[in-house]
Image 1 (tube, helix red, strand yellow):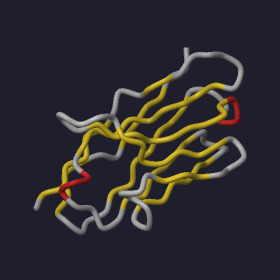
Image 2 (cartoon, helix red, strand yellow; image 1 turned 90 degrees about the vertical axis):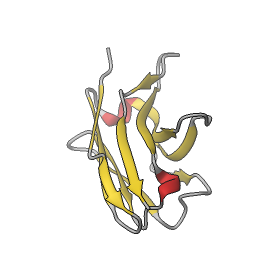
Image 3 (cartoon, one colour; image 1 turned 120 degrees about the vertical axis):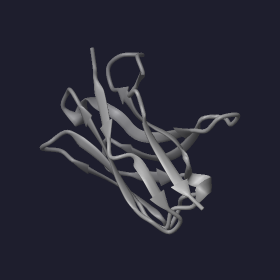
Image 4 (cartoon, helix red, strand yellow; image 1 turned 45 degrees about the horizontal axis):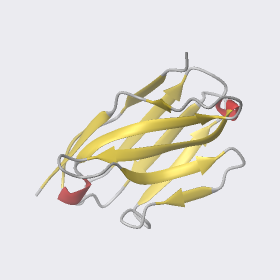
Amino acid sequence: QVQLVESGGGLVPTGGSLTLSCVVSENIFNFKNMGWYRQSPGKLRELVAIMSVDGNINYGDSVKGRFTLSRDTVKNTLSLQMNNLTPEDTAIYLCSADPKFTVDFYWGHGTQVTVSS
């Protein structure tokens, strides 16, 4: 069973920064995609950023230019650097992993990000 453990959430003021981390329990190259989504009350789950196994990255329109996705292939960690945060970024941020060789799809438990106005 794949495990995704997120950390790094918290409370920051508008304009602040946070870095989220997601540690996966397997070799990060076992997954065709890994990424971050976010969920706010009353809203649909939204893609934040996603990285393919070969390193291509796509960002959600609302975070382009402010968020940066990266990975550490030794530590099997996916990180999300978030800058210039606004209250609209307040959400639970969830790490995702899409394995290469099965139809399963994995989610972490999420980490709360709250941006105060």
